[in-house]
Structure formats: C-alpha cells, structure tokens
Image 1 (cartoon, one colour):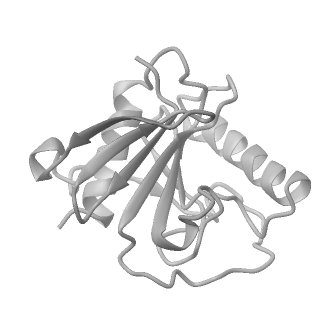
Image 2 (cartoon, rainbow, N blue to C red):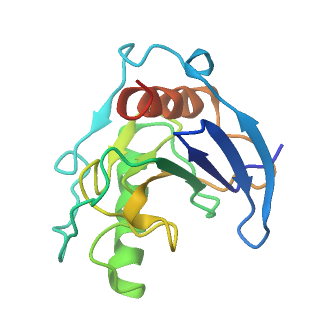
Image 3 (tube, one colour):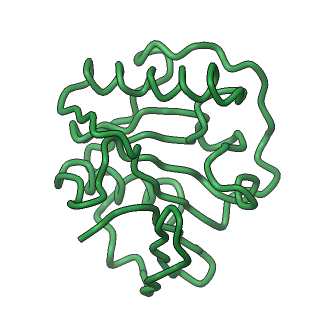
Length: 170
C-alpha cells in the first residue's frame, strides 16, 4: 500500500488518493462509521510546545468549516516515535517552508507523528500552503516520514482519524 496524498471532500464524503505527480487514482466513500471516537485521547501539541518560530504573516480561512482535507506524507525518510524527535522534525519542516520556499509559516495546518501526537501547524483558522488551488478551502495534514512503500503506524493513523473526526466530521 502506498500513501502519497489523500484528498477528502467532506460534503460528498469521498476520499481521493493522489500521487504527487499523478492524477487521482482512488475514490472511496467515507462516513462517520469509518472514524473512531474523537474524544478518546486526541493530543494536539501546541506551537509553543514544539517550539515553533513566529509566522511571518497569515490569512484567515475564508471558508469555515473547510470542505476539504488534504493529507500528505513528509516525503523525507525521517521518522519519530516520541515528542522530542517529532518536534525536531516539525521544526525542520517549518524551517524548509520559511527559509527555502519563502512561505509565511509551515505549510500544513497540522502534522502527525508516529508517536500518536498531532502537532499544530497553522491550525484550524489560517489558510495553509499545502495544495495549490485548494489552500483556501482545505485543511492540510502531513504525516511525518516517507510512506511511499508502506503505511504509517497505527498510532499515526488513529491520530489522523481522531483529528478529522474532531475537526471536520459532525
């Protein structure tokens, strides 16, 4: 199984699997039964806790709630299973986005580690930089690591389901 990017359209409740350089290859219907109870141990690590740099600017999300969720993997074979290591990697993502890409902040709204934690990026209220053409109408979530040839561990996938259930699925 390969994870490149998932694209979830919430009004129709479909998940689309995208490759980075390919067209959509998979669409499957989803519903509330696909997700676990969001109140069970969702841990969001704040920007302060992972020692984020200050954003340079921001744009308020014009559409709330966002009708789409775009799910990426980091694409870099660096993995983490504890908060300290995951925080270090999230900071490297933010450094890359600010210093090399010239963005206002880390591009993702949230980042998930294989430690089962969710790391706050731009959060729910600010437009991300993760999916050209969809940034103003989607929440971008990145799972730390390169999952081209295998899926993230159970802790990361559960955190992803909990985050979506918490923020998006009624």
